Amino acid sequence: MKFNFSKKGLRLGTGSLLAVAVPGIASAQDVLDSGDTAWMLTATALVLFMTIPGLSLFYAGMVRAKNALSVMMQCFAITCLMTVLWALYVYSLAFGNDIGGVIGDFSKAFMSGVGVDVVSGTIPETVFSIFQLTFAVITPALIVGAFAERMKFSAMLWFMTLWVTIVYAPIAHWVWGGGWLGELGVLDFAGGTVVHINAGVAGLVAAIVLGRRRGYPRTAMKPSNLVLTMVGAGMLWVGWFGFNAGSELAADGVAGMAMAVTQIATAAAALTWMFLEWFNHGKPSALGLVSGAVAGLVAITPASGFVGPMGALVIGAASGLMCYLAVVKVKHAMGYDDSLDAFGVHGIGGIVGAILTGVFVDAGLGGAGLAEGTTIAGQVGLQAVGVIATIVYCGVVSFILLKVLDAVIGLRVNAEEEEEGLDLVLHDEQGYNLT
Amino acid sequence: MTEVKGFGRQKGHTELYRGAEYSVDFVPKTKIEAAVPDALVDQAIEAIVSAASTGSIGDGKVFVSSLDHAVRIRTGETGDQAL
Image (tube, rainbow over all chains, first blue to last red; front, side, top):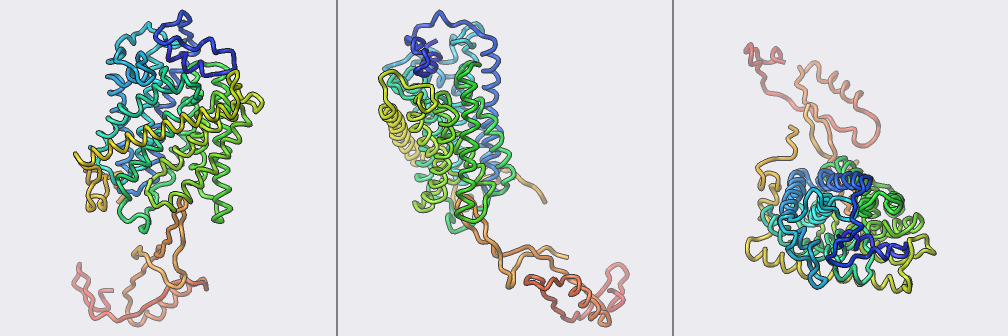
């Protein structure tokens, strides 16, 4: 199956160029490997674990107590909604037969043809499809962080339905489904553009279109439970091995290196953030430490199958620095209210990682090697094309979707409801009944 | 005993979350209300002051006021008998 090889074929300079798929033609090499399949079943579960409960806890701990349940519910409901849409048509839009390098067709709608005996690369297509689904689950869930504590649940469901259809599916197709970015030679191993820049930019647009939370920034909005946030961050880190090493779609040496560089970059970014905060404010904070870890996980995502351990160290440190500046300095200076820093961490971290992938893929810098005839500058240029294409397309379409939804059904709860808290107002429940 | 919040000269503290600095003015305190017979007032004050004193700001204050009347609901006793 082409999509499988089109992803693996990106592994330039390792002699795998022959494996670049001929679109639409099932390869004779499609023979099931039980080791690969066992790993991909595991990796799929790990990536789902990132959203429920990892990201849900990470986010719930950062909002005020009156909204803790609402963000957890948004993440969980997104998981369910994306799954149904994926099975109906989104899988096909992303990974169906290519139409002009832009989108897939409806040949796989209703998961047609995805049977027990259908093999994609070396794993069952069922596993490939559900593995990819877990990416389509976490990407919209990441956006929740930007509009937390003020968006109507109904508007959120509408937005995510439209967004995964019109924004996520095409961009996933561009990069992994045989679309134009992948064909161009843009390297994105596990979703720096598709997942993180995409979610970060959509989040930034949502934060601006919805406007600030009531009272921001003058009212104190203290995280309700940073213990949950720490637990969630730990789960994200663990799950990320499935995300990055799983994106090799096989249990091999590249998957092993992807895991190693994921671990190293994350640690470097976490320490960078911690020491920056220590230096600038006098004390290291737990929230800073885990924010840095997530920044590192994000930045190594596009690079994970391409760079070496020392490249990972630099990518991690760079993302720790850039995300720290974006979250702690730039956001407050600009005045927008990206509540949980979906853009500051995922958008900025994704951009840092995507660009530096073009540098550290170079064999001389410990990477897997550039494509023949490509220079570092040339690859960085290609990476920039991927970044800019994602920012522009996602930014413009997300803006239009939000504006239309705002006009038709309204995006925000009213001021009184926001004051009361979304748990009680939207769900007739409370996350915490401690007294 | 009541758990209350307030501050005197010691003021509150600041908290920092991803660059957002919040100053917390009110710190948790314990408020003790004791109804005692007139003869024990000085002894009660002495007990509270010696137990709470650390010599630093935030030790707290004692206020004394008179009570007009007291009734024990179960028995109907009044005045000092009700205490």
